[in-house]
Image (tube, rainbow, N blue to C red; front, side):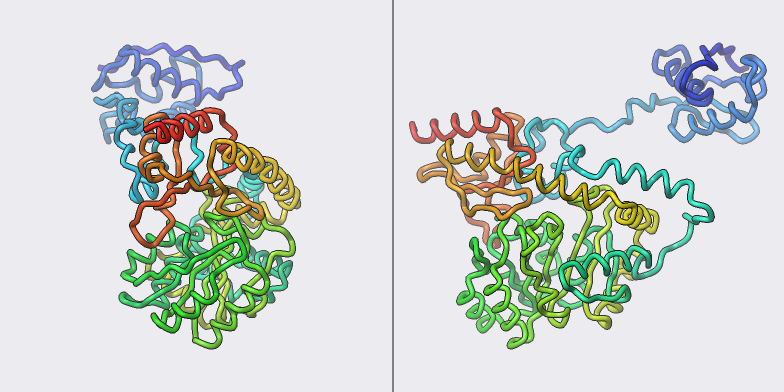
Length: 476
């Protein structure tokens, strides 16, 4: 026997009748008016009792089944689920679970931990700094597109109009590339992984910058590669060290950020870029340029791929830092034969990428507002960087390099202080996320510097913590 049920429905509300029914039944379930196992009124009964269409009730019941509030039993009707779905909602990780600041924490738990108040060590931009308006407009445009199909696999190389759009944009940095030379990926991270899977084998040696992007180090290590660091400073790589490392280790590839390097925020000088390409040609070295910050860089920043013509250089790009990280759209541009190999590896590893997301990015890029968004974002980052640069110095830290643009500022601790990892673990107990230098180096040795995200570092709590911690270290 089903339980009589009266719902407070109002056709004058902005919410649809379907939304109101869902809300009312959820409220009755959570307040124990409806108990687990209770049989719900039939679709016809509920529709007649409230003077509404059976189609409205069907849609509401279907939504409630999808949300786990109701259970549909063939031939018997709808019943209230035994467990309150609210109990299954994800909870924030307890703060103690994230106190051990290590690479595993950085690569996984940090994305799920909502308890952190000050995220100075994170690697992403705040939501309201990204192209939310452009993405919302693209979603609306895509939803009403006549004849648009969403249910098929995409092309192994990715959505062709987006690849064509990327090719036109790369022409802005004098890189002549065709759509068939571009493979769309699930973010730049997958692009780097596909390159490692396609070109390299366990036991091969690769060179990276020291310091380097922490995710890259994890990708290369998981592939069983021997990773050798080459020191990088404000002008670029230590060229003498680079040539010596090439001659000693005979590496297959060099991975780097040519502009706005993560973590230093600096760009290669033209002379350094030219010498790297000479080494690549001389020693048969692949150069993988993870260039995801290009849109935020000064217009005159050197472009390795354009200088090389995609002969030895493999170019990796992404839209995570400018449109949204949630769409997970990146790309690799390279020689045509290698692009075909990467597409095959992509299909083996995970089939096609999401064409829906690629269509969204294409609409954002072609609807006309994205360039203005980049200009606003670049200006906002320039203003944001000035605060940590001055405040960190005032706290007693010293900048490792003056960033040329972008998101990051690196600063070293004064002598006599604990390691940056120790301080980062203490900071996390205070609700402050820091990125210690240990995350960005090839050897597991104590470091005494941090990478700060300028977009999250305009917070007095950060500087109070640093001042207090450093004062305590000097007093001990």
